[in-house]
Length: 237
Image (cartoon, rainbow, N blue to C red; front, side, top):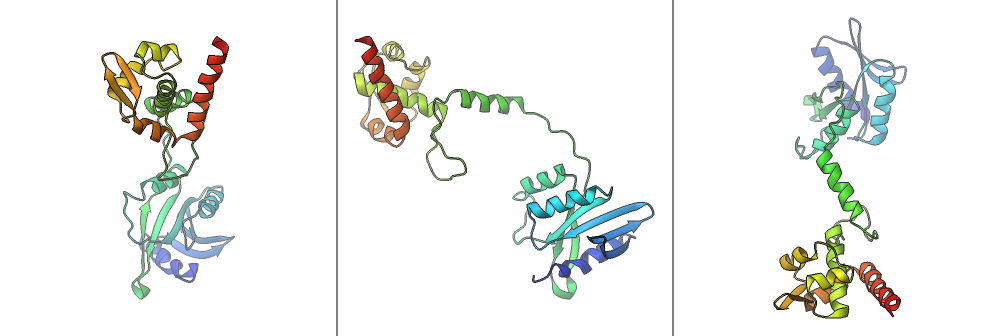
């Protein structure tokens, strides 16, 4: 599609079929549709963007029911468009897709503009986020990246225990706690989710070769906890 004007005729036809009187370019509005006292404004764009949504919000100030209209995306499905529809709904805008098929082009309303219900807070999810934040000592992750290892609060606990075992050798969970290991180190060592620990004899644990290797994939945390243990040793002398 070269021009936004290609969207106009199908949108005009859509609202005329519903009994509205349709006009173009009225006081900066791409499309207006009027029926009795109801005013509808439609903004046309080649792509769905933040700028288009912002333009729609400006049109709402006129008291008009406001839609944004764009060409229908290829491979559109409600499932993969769910988050976008949620945002548009929250902004109380409507969404129109135009199927560009030459002389057979037509517009369809995908989502009606309606008053958005206040967001229901998921306290369990909120609590889990806060708990995760509180469980981290230093933040070594980078936001917005994919395919990289993420250091969670649990990972950090495992790294700390691994550093303790690497420095002091075979220890009991109680001894690990004594060196600053997590209070839940018994279950962390027992379940050994990452395969970083070994159980050489009853009641004792040590770091595995896998653990030594993979802990180094979190260099900042490995250095942080190793240095902390060195500093603690100096204090005890």
